[in-house]
Image (cartoon, rainbow, N blue to C red; front, side, top):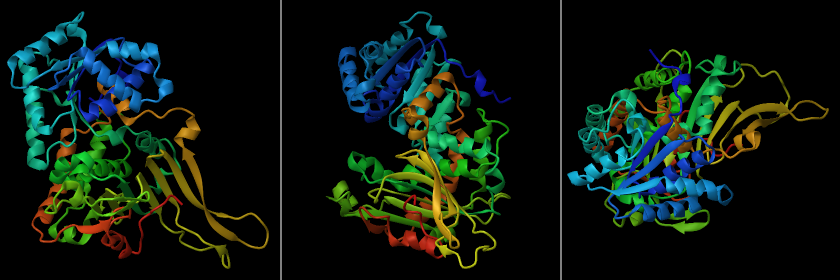
Length: 498
């Protein structure tokens, strides 16, 4: 039986271990997120943070490195000396060679160096390459630190295809029960994404319209102005489809399209998301050729500054990897049949934005003959980043006599302005859910594998095609073929929130 959120309580003690504790993710996201939660008094009263890496650092050196990252990624007014001193004092570092049994023995001893270690929740965050997930979990089991209070967090990507995802899931699942495995997608921790559930299911005016009778189409865009930077080696093996579409964009699509759960609980939301993935229109070879576009950024201007091409960033020109994907799909069920979902993501584009736009159909009859001005279909614009919020675009009459002058207006909700508080980073919410044992916002095994099942035919078709990704100048909205994907349906991409 599904447990309700009320059962997820903060434990009194916790050891939070980060494998990859000196890496970019740990220093830039995880440690600042944990500091913020400590600042708010939300971490367990008795907690430790253990950094594990190949770096030859003692506790003092790692604390110094973390201190430097906090000064960079936490606002100065939030670096309160008493909290900072307490937080740093709870950090410990262990150099660990995964092939050295003596290092694992030292790690075991470190976990046992606390009062009542059997009562502590143990979180193992694997911020390392996915190929290491299985072997690390096996070692944890061998040294006897995995019990019913242990949890493991897996960073994306969970494999590079369906077979490798299953292999990772099998290896981790041999050690941890599925209820103890937290596959993290930080997009699901963003306030605007969580608020999508509240907007849909706690407000009665939208749900009757949330179907094919009233919705014309849905657009989901995640665009970045940055290039691959120092991730070139990883990215060239992944590409935009694996890196963004298979996880982030499909997760957003699921939250838009899912049926109302009985309540928002640990499995109810995930059950409904899996149903959406199973209902996605299969990507046959003909559908891939017709409904997908892949591109790669070339030289151009971003924010007025010249930037290199993808080949320049890699240092060679032989790659066939895509940095841009646009595609069209459909959720083939009773609610959404006939409604196209357009997904788009890319690097080195004209703006940084993550957003969902739900376009409603035109009114069935024009009641204002002779009216002046411009009308546009109603749309709900959900802003995921960088400025989280929501806009409902309507048509209104301009004030004044002399007939009807119509123009589009919007009802705006900015979370920063409405709630007058710092918006927590997505990792802050997700890490607290791990500590409390609440898996609602994490991906379940069948969910990950269903996403790969849908994505894999696209990868196979592209791999067998002689065509290369279409080039687009950096600082633009992507290749022209992406615009044509919508234009043939009589639609255009939403490029701004106006």
